[in-house]
Length: 183
Image (cartoon, rainbow, N blue to C red; front, side, top):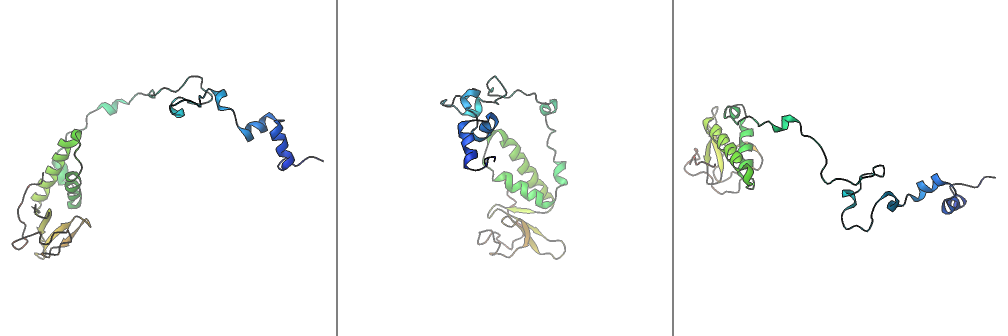
């Protein structure tokens, strides 16, 4: 009768290394026979490409960038900002205004904030630097609305209760204030 190859007797064949394929699957391969230096201080993935490749891995992969990557992007035009809805302009204004300063993109960020600011002002929004609020009088019911940065939505303005953490963001009736430039 044939011994159980998945039981204890089958394990004996693996230990004795009777079948080469079974031994390879069960016990694996000695990695040093594939050219790996297991005592190396550097990471193995940086020097070992594959067991089927004889040379070691190069540190920088060889590739060619397509020519389209070398084309300069078109200049930023303020006309683009006229197509954005108010919420997008608020996002641009606050997102790029509060980003940590990174020198390579400082000029671009400043321009984005400036153009968003100018477009919001041209649409009737007023920026109050005290409290960093945007206020606008609604055309339909003449109610003053403000942009709530925390919830990213427009809300009716109630002096002292704007939800922005400021106790009184608008002084003098909440009509729209300072017009201070944030850029």
